[in-house]
Image (cartoon, rainbow, N blue to C red; front, top):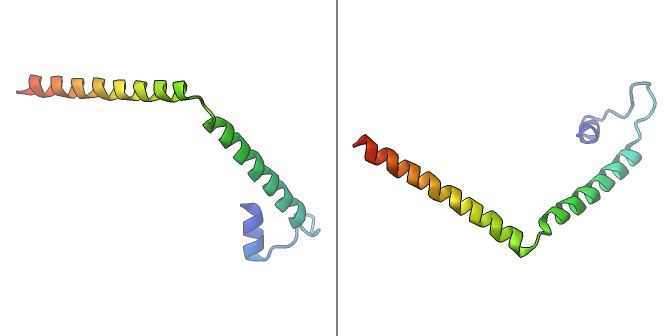
Length: 77
């Protein structure tokens, strides 16, 4: 965000009045983007059994919430 801000505002110098190194900053951002994309792909690479187990847990949580709400409604009558 700092690089974008400097480019937008035309701030071309660093704190020591030397020229800000935009080329290296953009290279670092590119490497970061590649690493972030790789990490995200690794997180998405789960087996089907893990996905099913996650879905089953979510469904069970929803069922329990529905039962709790029904119990509250029947107690409130």
